[in-house]
Image (cartoon, rainbow, N blue to C red; front, top):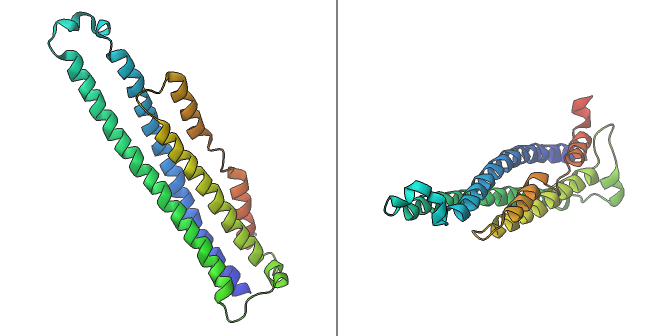
Length: 195
């Protein structure tokens, strides 16, 4: 049993790395989203010829400025798509770690009983704690990935300033991943290392 717990703790180290990458991607996606939102809001102003003032005398200025803004927006949209794909790869990794953890329980020479799954050895976590922690972390990140994908998909040239603000706030909040709960799971799994 103790060896299985140690193997699960190794899996949690990989999970910790994935979550660190997740936080980096979150910051990256927020910056990309803000940049895209700024351009979308700017485009609405730039489409009005009256907003060019004295520059209206320059032939094709409006089209040139709009074209450059659209190019920038397209580049940001592609970057956001890549960022969302990286979030997805983390979700896939977490799912694989969970699947491997479950397989570890079934693949041993003797499958542990329910009582053995809940048994704690000293301050080490039980096998149930390990599997449940992996499941919770995977589900939180999977839900958050779906939310992020939906928010990025909802971003369009027709988005109003209030829509952009609301979508941005959803990205900032990360409602499906309470940091305290994740930290609590890690505290349980690595309790003997803390002591």
